[in-house]
Figure 1 (cartoon, rainbow, N blue to C red):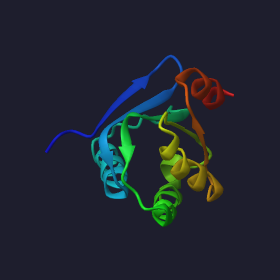
Figure 2: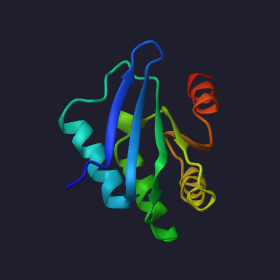
Figure 3: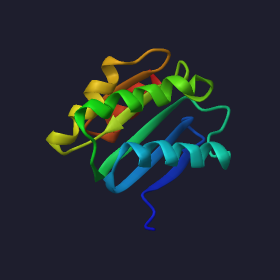
Figure 4: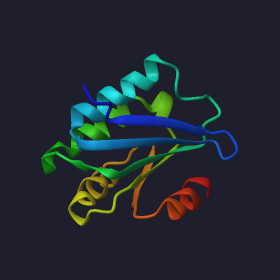
Length: 124
């Protein structure tokens, strides 16, 4: 199985970067977070998340965005009161993050097209 994700924590900013590769489905999103939980990849001092989908594409039916939001809500011990910036560049991939944002409760998410703007928002 090809690795579809990679994590990097920037201690200077407190941001956890998660990079995705290839076609990504809801199951990939959930299993990659479960991997992070099981392997203690999310430090306690985290300020927010930047999820970088620029080297991937969503393979998600529109109505499945509810599952992504539900996953974040189920894990408010990790995502609660945190900002989750989602970077995409493909116009058709922006739809999923916009729909997830509409379901935000207990965490904050927002789509971006650049890393710089995502960092600024996460740290604000």
